Length: 196
Image (tube, rainbow, N blue to C red; front, top):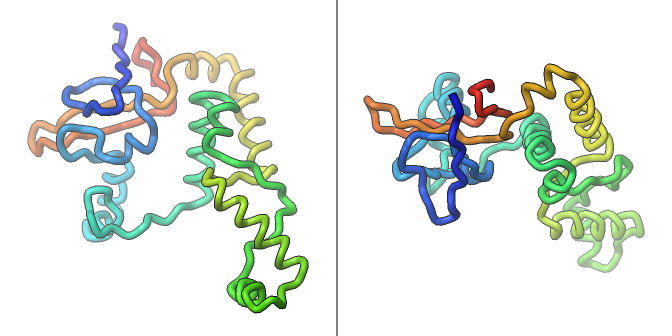
């Protein structure tokens, strides 16, 4: 059995079951001709009330911003590293020094506006303004080294190298017959012989 991986055009929606090359943000933002759910949405529904799921769902026009966690951020970083190496990781993440200044406080911003800021506050405000203007997500030097070391360890393990020898981050899509809702899954790696 050989699987057929399709690259979905930017203006194209998933309209038939299959295996698709699409970005992670697109995977999570309704890439199908009808409503879709990811495993994360289904897990949230199983764990919480439907109202909590709807509160942050992409189809909710009044949704609340979803909270990010260190685990989710590092997962996105590892997915980028596996998918496209260091270049892909650096396209989405900036690496900050471990000894970076703390984010400036409201009091420090007030002091700046009043012309009485300290040199440390001035440096902090300038540093974090540059970080925020950059727009990419953030990794510390320690987190970056951890990801690179984990990737290196995986590459050196013969079983892991075999398992990771397929296509990274492929969106699998199928339509539930009973509800008509599109179901999406995105394994870390999927080989064309079906191993995931």
